[in-house]
Image (cartoon, rainbow, N blue to C red):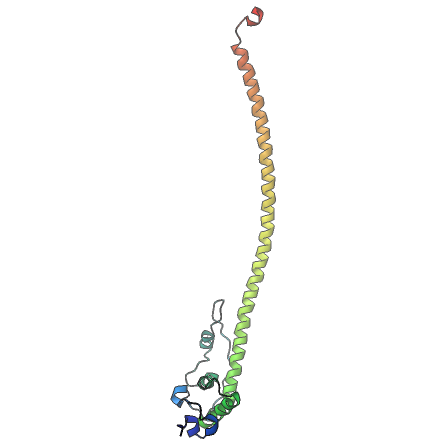
Length: 200
């Protein structure tokens, strides 16, 4: 005869349904904390947004005090679900979890409230970070457009400067050629021997 699982011992599931599975002991699923049905409802959180472009889920929860050690949260339920065999039918998993929650005194309303607050927190933080990044991108786009105008102005100025350089070069070269031609004319006149033209 197959050994009864922890859930079978509690009478949470029928043996013919779960006898093929080796269900973990409660200590293995990290659900040792129990609360009565009169657990206080979590108060709405004010979103504190950690710095940085990325979103670290753990850091978000930590910054917003969403990881109290003495709370029964969706993560305790996830720990239980993660211990189930992958081939276990979803319907069986759901029934087992609900029976376990009832046995341990977990308040489903409080857990669902925690879940909703976490979703709202993540949406708020995510939107805040995305809006900040969109604003930065918009500012960058404006700077890029301004830089494009500056680049165009500088490019046009370079064209003008290049044309001016060519004009200056031509003007100076023309003047230098004129001065050199005069110098050559004078020097050649000084070196001409006296009476040479008459001798010819």
